Length: 205
Image 1 (tube, one colour):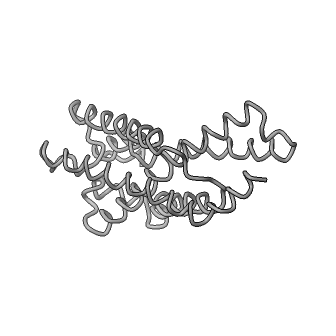
Image 2 (cartoon, helix red, strand yellow; image 1 turned 90 degrees about the vertical axis):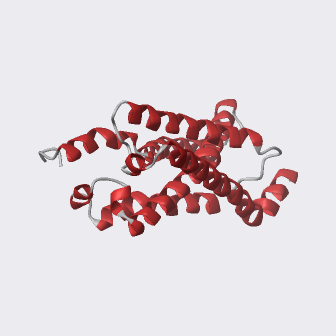
């Protein structure tokens, strides 16, 4: 891809680090080593040490406030746009370098991993949803600000930004927030069903 003389390909190579897929995949690469470290400490009887307790709270916040809702939104959104019109995502020639299986590795595997983490790791619903919601909204606001700053400077992160006017971009932002809030909320319903009674019994003992 780097040797392609097409200016759109060259622009994409520089813009790919601004894709939401890149952001949540990089965050996932930081998240799982922390999970392994906490599990290793648990096996050595240090589950409740101050550092491990802090890391457990941090990783759970990152998972439930950013990784799960944003990953599921982004992956579902990608496949909807993929089947609707590829040009809404990126210049069509990009996909000559990214075969179908590569799209699944980027936008299906990540979703499956997040769902498995939700189902396999014990959690319980927090007393207040607001801290998690505010963290998620802060992350989304940061990402949207980056996209808009890039657009004003002449760099288009997603092709759809070129065909939307300001009002449609605002509606798109509201849709993103609404869908992420949906995934944020639905995860706690799943956690209540899968882990609610088990976690409560463990805490009582």
